[in-house]
Length: 411
Image (cartoon, rainbow, N blue to C red; front, side, top):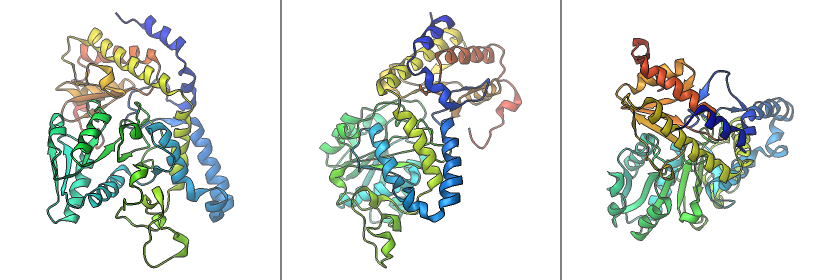
């Protein structure tokens, strides 16, 4: 049986405990939604004020040179590379995950011109499928997006498939794919492999080069705490960089952007995957989140993530087991990301009732209550307090309130 005292003892022994003070966390709020938007690192505000007042305010346009603005996408990309098992020069921070998917899917299809299928799974994050459909509509000429059940992906990689596009950690349930074996299956059939790391980067160990992945994308505003709409990132394995060409041939991806040539000439390496002018304020905010993450020990992060998700799932079963909450995540913590999800017909209303009590999770249609666990700032005691609130919401049917059934624009 898990008790409040058990969890308090874990907090006293937690080597990551001091990191909590590095974040702005509202009093009285238990934040279990860092898998949607990470909280504000305190030093990010200081850095933004400095960059705004001094670099932008005083140095003005000279900051592109004197403060290294022009190279921020590559330098931050190299830092993110350390988190996702990539090498320097294989990652760049830019644009959104959706835009980066379009770039890399197009590059992958061009590397396999005799193949016309983009293969993904039913239930993949919608923007991934939308962007693939958009690309196919532009390419025409027999291209198609083919979706199959997750368990049938490996068997569905035929000689028609140019690229397999999968999300490493499922956004709804947290179920995690075996990156190495899935990539090997794609390669065995002659296809390329593109991974979406939106719920992986900063949440679970990732080793892109160890898995021999070809391409990857990910976002900066979840576990990397880069701020709302933070720049995303993309990975292109070094072995593909000379041949991989992306279609958004903007001037920042040009070999010599300030020569203002009239015809496009791609830059060497990862830089060719840039397009427009970097968003400097957003990039420096992302850099602070990435730097803070890199200060922590990766093994401590994963160990705490697993223990927190195990404790939370066990506590819900222990305290709320008779209220119809069904575990939607894999039971084995080794097979899920840093989140735990439950199914309930009244899932949306339950989440709203919890938010009213200061426990912030989120809802995913049709019936999933989703709780994310970020080891850098969450305490074990937060788990006990969150489940105590959940028990009250269920025992007293607090969710059965018309106000909690009104769907907001963001769920």
